[in-house]
Image 1 (cartoon, rainbow, N blue to C red):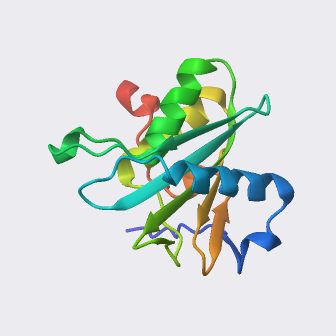
Image 2: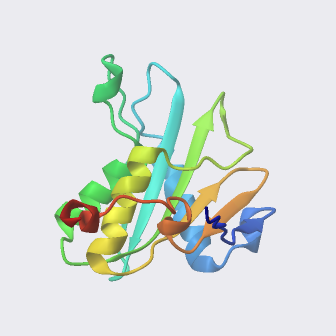
Length: 161
């Protein structure tokens, strides 16, 4: 038997003012995106903002459905919209935040497994790492590649093995 350890670095910030201007703007865009989320069942409004290599910022938010599996997360809404509008432009970063009980969550919210897989596909599609910024009013976490959140990942290479 052989054991391997998987580790990665995560940046933690105490507040939004510690972020660089680009990350700060992206978080503000994600916060704004929460306002138009359609979340009548969970009342958990999630916003995402994607920064593209060409400088464009695309927003997305969660879209719930009474048939729960039919909804879509903010991250995928933003990424799919970005990829449909700018199909040849790599994604540089994504910011994610949630609004619940009339305030932003104090802890950062990480993307779900499905969103991680879509983010990984986008990262690999352009062979360019995506910075992931997860906002919470009490702390902010950031990583420099989605591969850090999905270390044992499934890619197109697995289909050929």
